Amino acid sequence: MTIDFPLIAWGNLTVQHSLTATLTTFYPNSAMASTAFDTGLPSIRHVQAFIRDQQTVEVKVTTGDTLVGSLIWQDANAICVKGTDGQDTILMRGAIAYIKAGR
Image 1 (cartoon, rainbow, N blue to C red):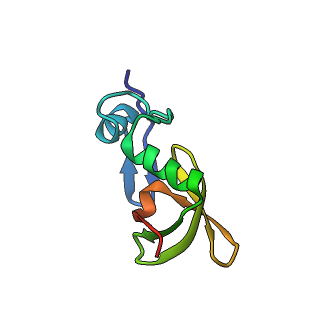
Image 2: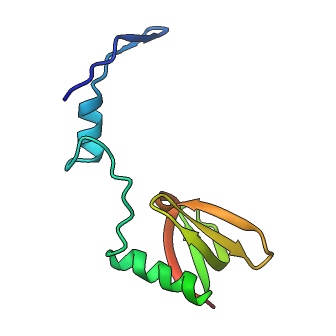
């Protein structure tokens, strides 16, 4: 199914866009993004073990910053890190470079 949006104009720029083209670019196997949380994936299970064991982890984000603390929860889109200062930080999965077992 294709949904064509009407022409949109911003100053001298005019855009007509098809939603299907965008979705198939980012999600080639479906027309919509999956919001399912696949607990069968090894990465999900490993992060869940960090949460269960309340293990201290080092989380490097794509900005180059590093957070140290314990993982509180995860969902399909984000994880929550409780830093050593006690502050909770929610990180979107796309912003995470790596998660490494504690120091």
